[in-house]
Amino acid sequence: MKFGANTFIWESPFSTDAHLYLLDKVRQMGFDLLEVAVEDPAQVDVVALARAAKAAGVGVIVCGAFGPERNLSSADEAVRQNAATYLQWCIEAAAELESPVVAGPMYSAVGKERLATAVARQQEWDRAVAGLQKWGDYAQAHGVKLAFEPLNRFENDVINVVDQGLALIEQVGGTAVGLHLDTFHMHLEEKDSAAAIRRAGPHIFHVHACENDRGIPGTGQVNWSSIAQALRDVDYQGAIVIESFTPQVQSIARAVCIWREIAPDQDSIAANGLAFLQDLMGHG
Picture 1: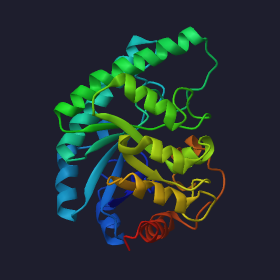
Picture 2 (picture 1 turned 60 degrees about the vertical axis):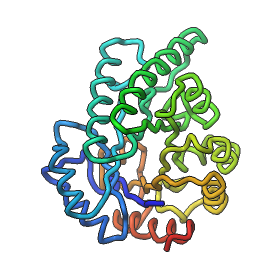
Picture 3 (picture 1 turned 90 degrees about the vertical axis):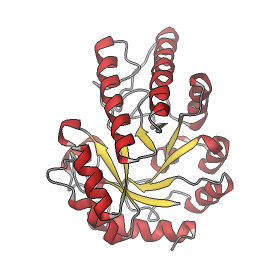
């Protein structure tokens, strides 16, 4: 099992011109991976990132940022096309960077929550299925998998829990599309996060570790011991990545509604979180 840290802990938007220092930083902290949240592909030189990652001895995970204009299931064809162009870039970048997955809620968009008719919701679902089928095949051809993330009800109205995700996976078919589980969202939405992990089983492609207040893993109410046991029970071998936030990265703090200090500083989120997770999973 490998442990990673998301670039959102320190920087947003990530740029290879300014933020390659994070590769050495996470390696010195003891991480195996840097998860790069790609908000603007124009700011990411994939060749330079791959070269720097190899020099630092750190793996890279590609995490997509799916805002309102990158909604693969939108009724607006132009928005769907924009999402497809972005997802294609992410898949090709992941292949170049040897990232096993592209992670994130690529079935829809962050911040989309609305009342809709049953007919409109079914049409949206069908567009998500069609989009993931197409891009799942493209990802598979590039040796990459798509790991889509269920979000809490305040951030998305399509996929909130594992069971909905499993239904989507069943309709998409194939083996290239699976789940990206985040303990923060699960804490809000699942009746029993550990039971949900066991139901998801081999369909779990990626995991984000985040406390219930978005702070340092291990300092809040998430039932970490039961989650760890469930991950062991399903023999999860993928990455566990810390994705937590502080007010210091103002654009992200605003996006995820962080209005107060929830950790001493950014480095504490990473360093203390890693120590906790390694002990939790028996990898210290």
